[in-house]
Length: 416
Ligand SMILES: *Cc1c(COP(=O)(O)O)cnc(C)c1O
Ligand SMILES: [Zn+2]
Image 1 (cartoon, rainbow, N blue to C red):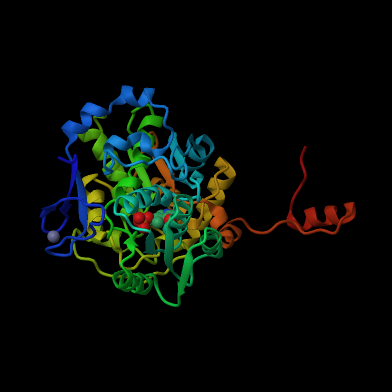
Image 2 (image 1 turned 180 degrees about the horizontal axis):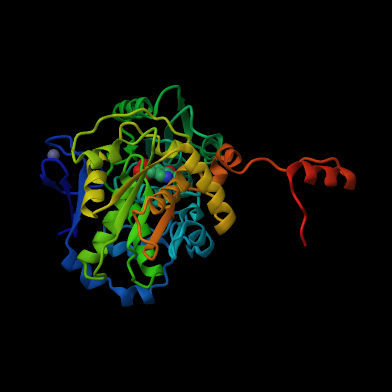
């Protein structure tokens, strides 16, 4: 017997979690992987983790849906991203126990690497040789990177608005890139039709239930890095909803297997111009009402979230908070986080922190609460966002008078 199976989030029917499985065979619903926690408990604990020398996300293999025979060592080095105590940012925001989990530290510079590392392992189990996906950018670039390392071909569909940094990553990693002149929703539908037609392995968000399982390893790391002191809040930016649901699942797994005795509350952060998941949570309803995709944070510009139900349930189950942030608040968070922590986030990567700042400002979180904000992607992927956040340099001719003039114009009084 496998230690895991698949269960439909809508009709609750169970099925064998074969490597090819996508959505529910009876109702088309999104599947969730379920585990036998009693069996898991026997093979992993705080002590085995302490002794483990594997510093990748696969150190948590006992909690992951891979067959015992599968070799997971051939991929990029994903996981073990730093968790920083953000004292200076905490002072600025009035939070004394604020942490930044910098997942932009992963090999292709986003949290999506955790899902893509899983995707190539499951594609190998499925005997596939080509993997495809639609993506706002990072799922694509991470898949292309992981596929390049492990030898899969990739067909990648991105909306034409995807930032150049991410598209360049794709091309460098040798993906066949299809830039779709349309919204993410239209891009997704075209990719689904192509996957159907050519039978590629499907790495589309939520449609493939294994991806979220890779993403949940970020929570295992947070728990270990905090010496198993589970934080009061974990903030994450939300697009399709797989990251938020994965973050919750990771903490839930640890709790269910008896490694921890506390669960955090999620802070679900969306953009004001695109907040279908937060809208549903706030309205207390399970119906997805699609919205526009109106935000600078391209990675969370998802008007029709693919993992809607799981994300809504995760936020509710965690007794979570919803916060919508404006583009201005996102840009301010990029700049403030940059100059107080040394972490450079892309807009969606800073949105979680923008949400923390806003929630603290509104009195939604107490000043002594422990809060982890996950930075989901590195700022070098989207230079335009960084420039909008941080302004321009002082431009001078190469002589001292020009420098003095430049300082004066910029209002800079040089100190020593
Ligand atoms: C994909 C992504 C998100 C959101 O994850 P979802 O699973 O789509 O909710 C947030 N930030 C970054 C940088 C991303 O790439
Ligand atoms: Zn179903």
